[in-house]
Length: 182
Image (cartoon, rainbow, N blue to C red; front, top):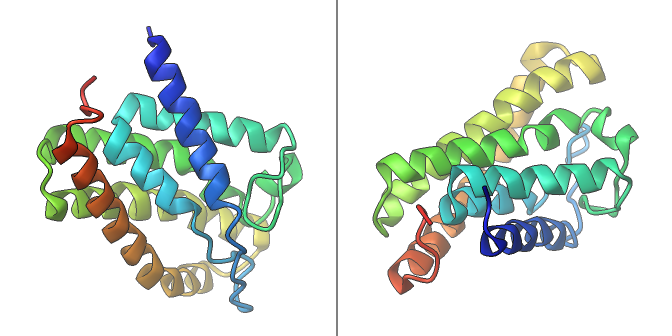
């Protein structure tokens, strides 16, 4: 059962995901998926809140988008967006936050930014890509090799986001504000 504090944290991080959507998306042109800041929120939810609360926060965000709130980058929202080419990435955010948090709870139990970076890469990038790329292949009709290689253009930015998440989570942990196992 979640405490009131847990519910507030989940809502706060869902709002953080929405706030990161205010940064305008950067279209790449060769792929129907823009560069956004929102995967940073997925990594932060996992590394700071842990698996359970992080995945609940990301799930709440996805539900709000499904309900039509324009919370995705560029002011997009609704079932149509989730069923479109970018939907697999967004729908994988709760799983990405869960995996990031699960790995953080087991392998990054201190404020070590290197370990937090590693778990952000594994959960916040690899897991999200594992959900998004096959969806892009199926929904957009892109050949799988183009979907995979096109997605590689996002890796440098996502690695920067993983670094930011690691530094932020390390600071939160050092301050003792939110123990990950709480």
